[in-house]
Image (cartoon, rainbow, N blue to C red; front, side, top):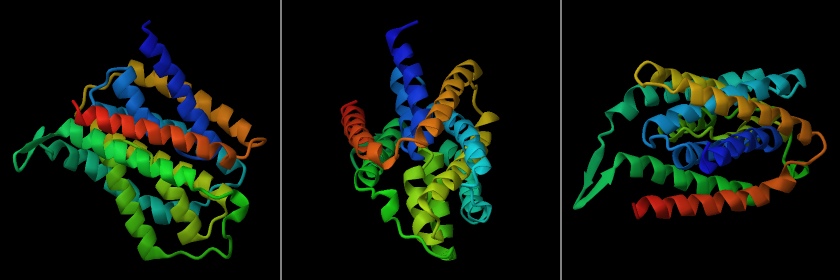
Length: 266
């Protein structure tokens, strides 16, 4: 077993720990782990595999949160349905329609650079969200009130981005649930996991019939990530997630910049 592969398995475990501990962030490392440590093809297979890994892991995590009363089903339906539909259509129809090379004036943009470049930008945005995040106690809470137009728009946007790059989008979903649905932070985290699970697995279904899936790799990485989310959920009972978010956010920021530079330089 090669050293990069071993690091990849450790990274898969860390993805689950992050999802369980802070409700997001870890899933945005899944694509880089698949591409740079396991050598998975970047534009098609890595996002597809990421959707399955993140979806299955988040489903297990959301089941735990549901038993603790930290999943709001109504919010899941309002936000999740447009995201599920959009991510499926993106993976099934939009991604296969993107040409391998896109001419932009005299520059030829490859499909890999498009996907990985967008992914790196999302990593930077996610890192800023985590670095600037407030403590749970500072989150505004009040009677639940849905801002339906903004929730629907956010669901569609998250669905498209998830479909294109394979990231769960928790860093977009959680703030939206707190702001537009007035959910307490812990319930927003639990509800976000269920939304991520549903839209990711439905998105993967758009790939499963057209790609030659390496189920052995998926099974191992997913099992490790699921083990990690059990550990993360357990740790979350005694470790406030916000204390770790800033440090993890800086790590994600550096990774995003490195990936962007690497992909641009070929």
